[in-house]
Amino acid sequence: MQQVDVTPRVWEHILHLKNATPCACGDLWSVGEDLALSLYGPLAHRGNGPATVAQIGQSLDGRIATVTGDARDVSGPDGLAHLHRMRALVDGVVIGVRTALHDTPRLTVRLCPGQNPARIVVDPGGRLPDSAPLLQDDGVRRIVIQAVDRPRSQGITVIRLVPENGMLDPSEISSALRAEGLSNLLVEGGSITISKFLEAGLLDRLHVAISPLLIGGGPQGLTLTNPASRLADAPRPSMQAFSLGSDILFDCQIEERAN
Image (cartoon, rainbow, N blue to C red):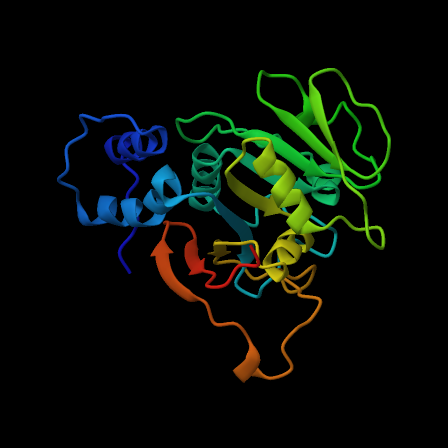
């Protein structure tokens, strides 16, 4: 399997695709650079219309963390660099409140050139404190989607939605974010939030990054509320596999969307 080669030149070209600006980067690419264009180009090219992609990193045995909840190194260095590139190509990154509380992510772009996306947390009960890293004011939009009437610090946008059985509808979340001008979204975690967007038919693509790691126990990756009882009925998305270096990425295209 040929390895994706994200050279500074091809990444500059990809960022120009995102911004719809001309680039004097040339048009002769190596095999590895062509693979980078195949992987990142469809999301970067805004002419393809609004898109929602989810990313999950897991071990060879399908775990996303240890039994104690340690998930920090489940992806290798190249898997992490890929995640930061995905952040740089979208308008906003969505995570659930459990991930925000447990992992305290910053959701910024640090491992590649690019602009930080809007940071969005789905927090129905308003549990996330305003002191959380992803809510700190650095000039980037910060959005909390909640069901309760809880005030937030100045500069944080609050989107109020009505819950059903204590949960917020992913379709309503998606519509509300699009109304805020956020067309391209990355659903980064956790696995429950990704699963809900997947089951709601809201994903265009699903990225599963697999690290050569055997954990042996701990939480699994995606778990659907209505799993297939027969393999013949299980979704089989079309996909391409890419070698990132330390990780193998399955880029899955989701054929059907709810809206």
